[in-house]
Amino acid sequence: MAEYDYDVLVIGAGPGGYVAAIRAAQLGLKTACAESRETLGGTCLNVGCIPSKAMLHASEYFDAASNGTMAEMGIEVSPKLNLDAMHAQRRDAVKGLTGGIEFLFKKNKVDWKKGHATFQDAHTVKVGDETVTAKDIIIATGSSVTPLPGVEVDNDKQIVVDSTGALELKSVPKKMVVIGGGVIGLELGSVWRRLGAEVIVVEYLDKLLPGMDDDVRKEAGKIFKKQGMELRLSTKVTGCTVKGKKATLTLEPSAGGDAETLEADCVLVSIGRKPNTDGLGLDAIGIETNKRGQIEVDHDFRTKVDGVWAIGDVVPGPMLAHKAEDEGIACAENVAGQTGIVNHDLIPGVVYTWPEFAGVGLTQDEAIEKMGGDKKAIKVGKFPMMANSRAKTNHEPEGFVKVIAEAETDRVLGVWAIASVAGTMIAQATQAMEFGATSEDIAYTCHAHPTHSEAIKEAAMGVQGKPIHI
Image (cartoon, rainbow, N blue to C red):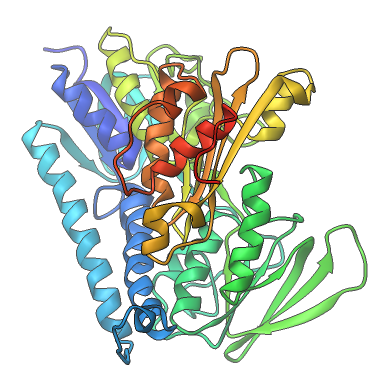
């Protein structure tokens, strides 16, 4: 009789968990994955990355048809919104992808244990009514919406909602207030603005998109204002009351000051996410979380308890699906005795609005700080998308590419982009930086013409002091 039921048990079937389970099985380990949802894929595939992109893509078509963009190119249409059909295509995309993971589990002989998992000891987990043992256990339980004190979310009423509720609105609100000017708030706020809502973004900080390069953050403010969003920056929400079908928010300046009220048909709370560790029974195995509620791990994703590993949103680092996926692969390889590595310095981030915002590596301020505060220790090249041939012909003039390099070595430290396809463009920068590229390497790599990615080449040539098209 085997000592354990499985070689590996993965808790959570989100992007990190399901990838870890499949990779472990590929490496010959007997693998199971515990998941309490009715479908696999976690937040990302069910109520996050995938459905939001389906709504963003569909709403882009509607916006282009209704705001005159298509008319400018000689296509005269009068669009009519069928919100039910738009939701249906979103749900269909989710169903296809989550079903695809279930197929991959069967193909790779990964057992799906349905139910909530709770540690009994370091090698024993109770999943629903079943007890499962494993030599190694990987925690990949993801994250959930961070609550805002004084603002109670009730997705069923569709007045005060979180990101999950914002995907299921049955009608377009007349006025939507988005609390939080980060990725989720701007993406979902963009969806409903395009479909006809008046959108007001309330952000505690003085700029949108915390964590991105300052030039990108400044430009974001201009772009979203131009699109019709009202931005209430340096403002905090201190309370919310719901009466009938209206919500009334209480606002104050972030630095303190007189309060005011703001009424809305729908309020979206999107101030961030928190690790899912409650109910896991971590105390039963002697694991404590840090001040942010995260599980601390070493470079190989080991926790302090032998045989217990952790990846994704429950460990320190950006809460991004692709970061979790890479960690899932690396962790499974480490469990199998191989060497799994993730370069956490090069995790690209993307905001899928119109245009897209993307970045990888250091911001300009971070690069200067890394160089001891010496501004002359870095070089910066910047190229506007309005000078890019493909952006020009596509009527996509907004944005730029910015390349930051170390002055002495010319090694690229960071790349930031605002463009219609910035999320795709940033892959080139990430790959180049992974291999220690200099700005000269990028500047003298031949790029197909006309493409948006030529803007990366031009920005790199700007670092070299040899810009061609500006």
